[in-house]
Image (cartoon, rainbow, N blue to C red; front, side):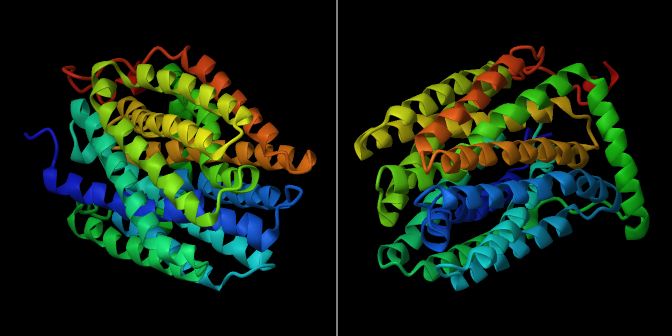
Length: 420
């Protein structure tokens, strides 16, 4: 048997290319800065506070629903269909962002929440395909390929939005992003493995999903290393998500980056992130995901400390490039770490909990950044420094995990963590 399904991996990676246009233009740069600075206003941190609320509500919604939806996907055979629904809800919300203008705080927040819930919720089902399309010893590399392709998609999305942003026609940027996401995601629904035969009716599956969620929670709590990993992931991913969601707003307000230059900055970050994802792919299998994640957590701690002292735009470019090289590595290695700890046949369900932890982690961080900035009259430097605590605590917690070693050359033992 081949170590991975080439056609399925290509379609899987292309989906990452597609949805990364949303992540880059909406979440990380243009819409985030436009909403905080132009729609709300951020003279004393009001925009930071509102964007923090948007992010936290979005992530709380995904966190509360993803375990149940993952279990339903497994038991009813709806994984691909749910991936489709979540994807195109996000696409529709993105297109409607073209209608948001200054002062439309609630409408802009609602669309951002709906779009982000669709984007993040779809990842539950997307991630669950990884163990199905690649053998265990190749999952680190395939995961890294997906992230690397995603960074390329981010750059294409930003380049497509650039002419609109340069002329301050932000609605055109959001419509273009919706089109890229919707069109390029389509091949995944044609090529990825078909859903299993329907075993339960939808009505029955709802009850089963709740019971299975509780069962999964008990299974996770019973496995010490899985429990420890998810606790560490809860903390350090909070820091990663917060930096992603606020970096453009920080650059625009504190360092005076024009909106068009935010695109240039983010493209530079994506190039460095792509390089980091590719370069760390094989070491993730050879050294183990734990070693890679711990290394990048040290790197992220240095990044937020340097961001507190940064004074000029060129200095921020250097920090952003350094951060980017660790971004792809920590995301890909974390996904691989989780994939090695789950039993075969329960991928969507366990990745539902992975999403639960990852998105729950994005509830506290944005509130901390927004709250600190607003409380101190718009001091974003203090907010970014506060985020550094999440990396240090996550590093200490991950050091206690006795798993995540090298996978290259080792046989698959998919169910070992449930029985040990």
